[in-house]
Image (cartoon, rainbow, N blue to C red; front, side, top):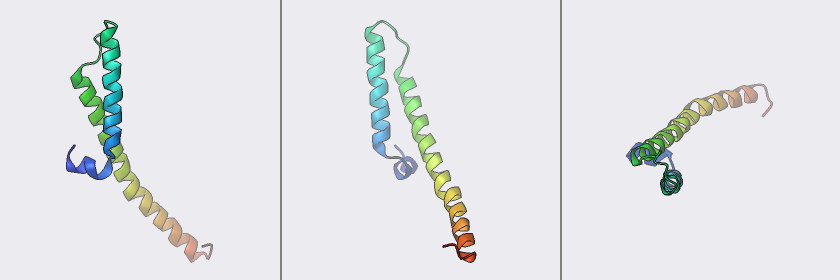
Length: 80
C-alpha cells in the first residue's frame, strides 16, 4: 500500500476484502468455475481502498468546512 492509502485507509479493510475474495476464488475454483483471477482480486481491492481514501478526503475537507460555517452561523444567531 502506498503512503496516501496508509494515511486514509485502515489496512485491515484491504486484508479483509482480499481474504474474502481469495476464499471466494478458491470455492469457485474447487467447483470448476474459473471466474475470478488474481488480477481481478488485486484490482477490486485497489479500487475499494482508493474509494475509501477519496471518500475520506472529501469528507474531511468539504464536510468539515460546511460544519464550520454552520457552527459560525449558529453562534452568530446565539443558538450555540
